[in-house]
Image (tube, rainbow, N blue to C red):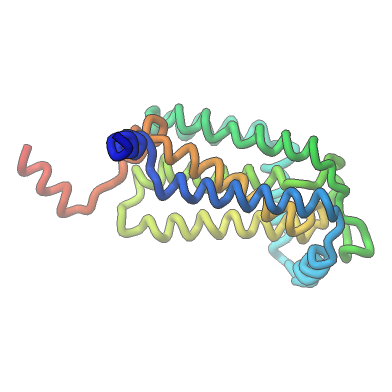
Length: 235
């Protein structure tokens, strides 16, 4: 009976993704307790100052772009992303709706923790003043959502399989630059950014682990050229 139950459970979930989700949940819980007990962590300040010491020069407009898509124009950016995805992959609507619920975890934690934003001299400078609680970084949750959802719904469908690792590398770079921008501006502590990343990855991993949600999208993955040819010949 136990084996049958485990089999039925496995039929409904992608277990590796479920494991990733669980690990992220544990990490977020531990990080949240740490931040609640110690709102100002010395290591946070040291890392933030090191990041802010990196000259960005001509890349400043890129960092400003990240601020805009996660701030004043966040709703418009999400609407555009949703419209593009649904136009090109209608089967992804469940994934989009479920993935967007990650914002609920952000609003819950940002309300409960109410962590103060970085200030000088804890960091070198503060060039952005969002005003709300610092923990976790909502921008980081959003960047992670964009990267994973776009690659899952469009990248796996339209990018040839041999090029998909490059697509995922670009997605990771997009998220990494976003995290850098939040720390460099002084808007967030590094632990805020880490928590936002873990929430985004954890929730999306859970959503993708649910076969009812993810299989209609994942089944559209591009196949190697040889496999496509064999299928056409068989038909």
